[in-house]
Image (cartoon, rainbow, N blue to C red):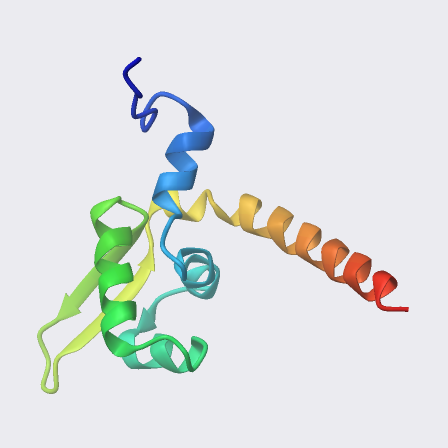
Length: 113
């Protein structure tokens, strides 16, 4: 039996593939208030994230149409990242994940008692 790639067919498979990068959710959340320059975005990420990893993840999210990279002609060069229109629609999902994450943290804390 052939295994199908359900990307673009199944909403769950499509979402899972778009957010498959380890830091994708955190990047989208961090960009939700507005545009952020690369170095500022790097400072807001966990220390475990390398420059190269952030750069790759941003390129992937840009290729998928979830973020926009805006380059300004200035010296030194200025680049900002922001959510695209379709990326901004993820805010509702991000809010729901935040709520669920808090509930799960409470669940974990109740088990430690």
